Image (cartoon, rainbow, N blue to C red; front, top):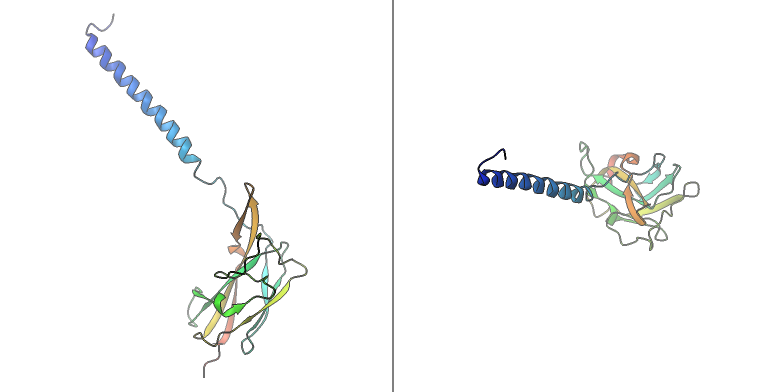
Length: 177
């Protein structure tokens, strides 16, 4: 026997077992934590594109055209309340109403059930009536489309931030007096 002291041998075996137990636990915890991290972020496909065909501040008529390769479910609409403001922060969804329940805004209850991408590519030219009379002047609108995509057997909402558009409104809407 190399070690004459049995106490030292049992202490060394105890340390080896402790290190092995710690390594085994760390492998189990690592594999458990890895399951909580998404493998790949869900993104809109390239080719999602919308644009503002026209906007009339007096009537509040907003016409949006889908000129992309994919259908979308709706869009979020925000506005700027200052001409120098870079980022739109004012939620305009309360001021706009959809047509036939197809338009879906950020805080709206117009969601179709089940969620679907009903705003088709070639056919979609929808409009919304917006009433900005109760709001301060809006100098720009940012419109961000969203769509539903299936992942892991679930229909998930995906915001198409790469397809965001910004429409400047000269003079503000409603016009200042």
